[in-house]
Each structure stands twice: as structure tokens, then as C-alpha cells.
Length: 222
Length: 282
Image (cartoon, rainbow over all chains, first blue to last red):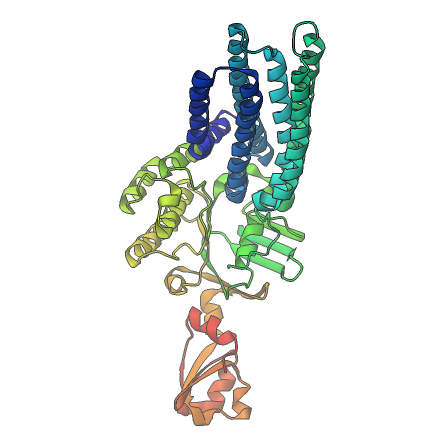
């Protein structure tokens, strides 16, 4: 598993590493100039998290397109996919912790009234839902064809995000009302990630069903 | 022992079907897989490797089916028509991430081949098509597989690189238990090194067996075009007229010799002629 995770890291780093780094650099510059006001948080944080997810999907799409390597590795396909999920979980966790950290700093400075735990729960929950749904679709139809389905997944995730935003807007994360909102967000995140083993099984099944031939076109070049 | 064992194998794409009732290839030999574009060679290879699901039947490599036996995968090396490594990785990163999975990885051979073929440590997408193909070949060979499956390994290679690659392949075959399944359109590569031949067309195996036996069962006939009459034409699988003469392939050598006698010239066909003339050029 360690070697598989290392493989994921090297692939991720080579495909998306610099993009993510630049996003954070731009964010920090914006943070320094604009400060951690509420509007900025509400606009920029979903962009960061969304982009993080999209980068992962793009990276996964590339991996699916090159799929032969996954099928030829002398380890069970299920283990390859489990390592991929575990790695993505790690990436999402890190992104969520960073975002939560920024919110926590803003709260300490008195610029923001949002509860960091609620932000953490929302971020992890949205990412968990996206991952659980998008991975099996991606591994069944490949990046090109699953684009339509991905729009639906994004719509669902955006709805969840919008709900979280509304909750934030109405100040449910503030002291006094925060406990139920925090618990709700964190419970949602835990539920989403608890469902991921099912998603892993579904992905492996879909991957085997499609093989490397995701686009369902005959391989005629030979 | 058999390196490849296929029974009632079928892949149905709707408009295109690959159907192979039976195919057995022995271990320890080089088998050439030939046929026109779209004959189903790559589909067969992908089914053997478990890269695409089969509609029905069994496709065994060495001791079992690739899709169900992860341990078997370390004994099979594959050079695909298009390289399958992530294009954003460097050759060094591909080596670092994949080599630990193979217990018998030959690092000395890897270093030697990388130097010999002058493959740079740059991103896969920055390599030329030929360099990508060579790198895939190096990675496949350094896993020390028992069975090496090559799908157009010499396409896009310059003559020098092609010569070196064939040289490494010959060295690989010095080990008795090593087997190569070699699919190519460059049939000149196969003339010297292959022992067995499998010919495919329209998703079916047309012929399979020892190369010499297959080629000996055909005969190339050359002679003046006057020899071609409606009666004699029927003896040929394919004929090509050129000016005053003709060249034809027949699968009835004795009958052809009896028909044309000393007025025609006879020789054994090459693999390329077998493929070209079997199409029935007239």
C-alpha cells in the first residue's frame, strides 16, 4: 500500500502540484491585501475547494485514459483503487485543514464569525460526496463521456455547498446556534466518507466492466 | 507448457466481433501475430492481458487468466502500441514508482538500456514517439518477465534503434523458458526471429502454427501473364499483374506446379507476401 500511495503522490505532484501551489500563493496574496472578511471567504474558499476537486478529477481522468498501467501492476486492482481513494482523502483532508486554518485565524483576528469546525465539516462533506459519486462514473466511462454526469454531481455538490452557505449567512455557525450546525456538518462529512468503501467497490466493478476501453469503441488499430 | 491458451474467446463490439474458438501457443518461442489493420490483433492482446473484458470464453497466459491473477502480472511484460505511462511523469519517476512492484527487477539492465538507447530523463509527453516506444520496451524487459507481449514495438523507430531492440529481444530469448508474442506490420522483423505464426483477419484466426510449416504450405508463382486463364486463376489465393508478367500466391502448391510446369518460377512466400496476397489482389 505504501508503494501505491507513493505512486499516487508522484502522479499527483507531476500533474497538479504546481497548479495547487499557485492557487494557494494567489490566495495568500489576496488574504494579505483583502484581509479575511466574510464575503471573501464565501467566494474564494468554495473556489479553492472546487478547484482542488476538479484538479483531482482531471488527474484521475488522465490516469483512467492511461489505464493499462493499473491493470498490469502485479497487485489486485481493488488495492490500486483503494490506495487512490486513500490518497485523495489525504489531499482533501489537507485542503480542508488549510481552509479551516485560514478561517480560524480570521476568527481569532475578529474578522470572521464563522465557526471553523463548520467550515471543516462542509469542506470534507462536499468533497466526500463528490468523490463517492464521481469516481465510479469516471472509471466506467472515462473523462470524456462522464463529463455530463460530472455536471450533475457538481450540481448536487453545489446545492450542498449553497445550503452550507445559507446556514453560514444566517449565522448558524455563530455562538449559541453553532453546536447543531457543527454537528450537522461534521456528521454529513463522516457519513460521506463512511460511504466511500461502497464507492470503492462500485469503482472497481465499473473499472473491470469497462477495462481500458472506456469509450466503448472497438480497438481497431491492430 | 503453453504460454497462451485460448478457448471459445469472443469480444463483441456490436459492429465488430473477435471470435477465436481455439488458439494454443507454446512456451519458449517467438510467435508472430500478423494481419491487416482492424483484423483484431490488438483486441486479442488486450483480452489476453485482461485490459478489456471478454464477452465469453477463456484467455490464459502461462498459468492462468491475467485479470484474476495479480501475481501472474509480474511474469508478463507488455509493450503497447501507444505508451500507457502518465504523460506528465518523467522517465525517472516512472522507473522509481513502478520498479519496486517487481521482485525480479533488473536495475543493471535498466541502466544499460537507458544509456544504450539514450533515453533522456524528461517527461513522457516530451519524448518522441520512438523514444516513448523504446522506454516502454525497456520497462517491460527489465521486469524480467517470462512472457513478453509486443504490440508494434518497432513502429516509429529509426533503423539503429530497431536493430538494437531486436538484439535485446534475441538476448531475452536465449533463456529457454522465455516467450514472445510479437504483433507487427513490419513483417521483416519477424522473418528471422519468429518460430510460430498466427494470422488474423476480420476478427478470426486464419492460420496458426510453425512459421516454416505455414510458409511451406504456400507457394509464390511468377510467370508470363498469358498463363493466367479463367481455369488457372482459380488456383491462386491472390494474383497481381504487372506489365507482361504476374505474381501469385497459391495454397495448392502441387496443383500449381502441375498446371504451369517449367513456364513459371516458384519460391516460398515471405510473411508479407502471405498477408498481401491472401487478401486476394487480382
